[in-house]
Amino acid sequence: MGRRDPVTPEYVTWNIDHDEYNRAEYVGVMGEGHPVFYDPEKRSTFRGRAHPEDERITPVEGSEESLGVEETVGEAIERLGEKTGWESLSEFAREHLESDDRKNESN
Image 1 (cartoon, rainbow, N blue to C red):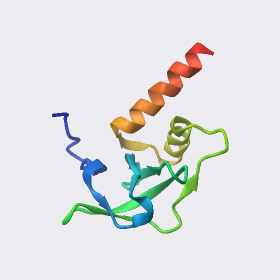
Image 2: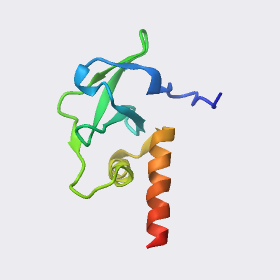
Image 3: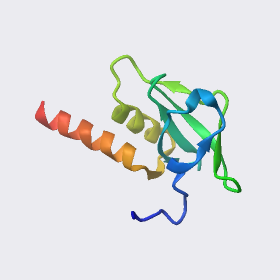
Image 4: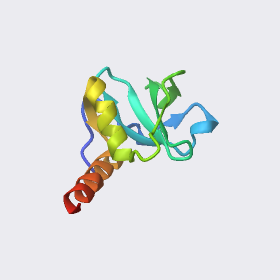
């Protein structure tokens, strides 16, 4: 079993209170404390409000940001991090950042 961040829960297993986001991937926790998710169907990210008492997330209305036409998930994660920084990143986010790094090194 992997190490859990003592400050932020592993939101990857929490339920999202919106059927529209049932395939969303947990990205990480932004500097202001909001968990962030990526929706592959919409190619967009959104922030969530955590409800630890029953391990669920409510999407924050108006927080959805679409990826640019040619923007990768890794680039979107970097762009979001430039706003407030990241408290923590999920394995999903790290894989996309590393994938982009390898792609850039081969060009």
